[in-house]
Length: 303
Image 1 (cartoon, one colour):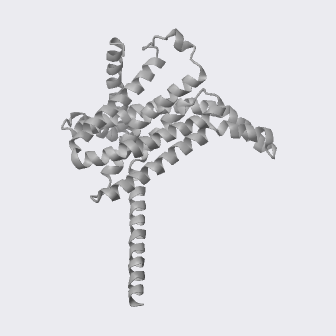
Image 2 (image 1 turned 135 degrees about the vertical axis):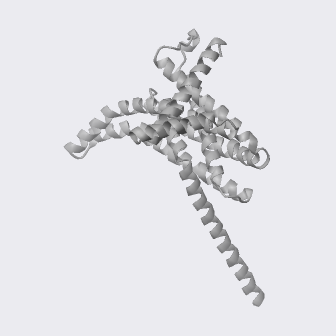
C-alpha cells in the first residue's frame, strides 16, 4: 500500500512539473511573440497583395496554401536551422539575416520602381496567356518565398528573446510562437480579403436598412482597402528590409549605418518629437537605395 501511495505521489509530482513546464513555455511564447509582433504585422500587410485581383472563390484556398507553406517554413526549416545555428554557428546568423534583408530591399524597391515606370519587364508571349491556375501557382510561390524571409526574422527575434535554457524548451517555445503567429497573421488576412463577401451578404440579406447600407458601404470600401494594403505591404518590405540590413551590419561589426540612423533620428526628435517615425523613414530610405542598386544590377545581367 505504501508503495502505491509513493507511486501516486511521484505521478502527482511529475504532473505538477509538466504543468509548470507548460505554463513556462506558454509565458515564454507570449513574450517572444510580442517581441516579434512588428515582423508579424509586416507579414500580415504584405500577404493580401498576393490574392488581390483573383477570383473570390480562390481567395481562401490560396490563403490556406500560403499559410501551410508558412508553417512549413517555420517548423520544418527555420526552427531546426535556428537551433543549430544558435548552438554551433551563431556567427552565421547575422550574415544570413543581412541577405534576407537585401532580398526584401530588392522586392520593395523593384515594386516601387515598376510603379513609377523606371523598371520594365520583358513579357514573354507565352506568359501573356498564362491561365488562372498558373498565375495562382506563381503568386503562392512568391508569397511563400517572401514569407520565408519574414518568418526567419520572426523566429530569430523570438530565439534572441529567450533566456538560456535547454534545446527542448527553446524548441517548444519557438514551435508555439510559429503556430500562434501563423494563425494570427493568416486568420487576419482571411478576414480582410473576405470582408467584401460579408458586405455583399449584409447588403442583400441584412435585417434592417442600416445593416444593408453598412454592407453596401463595405463592398465599396474593400477594393480601396486591399489596394491600400498593397501599398502598405510594399512600404513594410522596405522598412523591415532596411532595419534588418542595418542591425545585421552592426552585428557583423559595421556600426556606421546604425550610428547614422540613431544620430539623424535623435536630431529629428529634437525638432519633431517623432523618433520612431524618423527611424522608419530612414530604414525605408536605406532599403530603397540598396534595393534600387540591386534592381539595376540584376536587370543589367538579365536575372
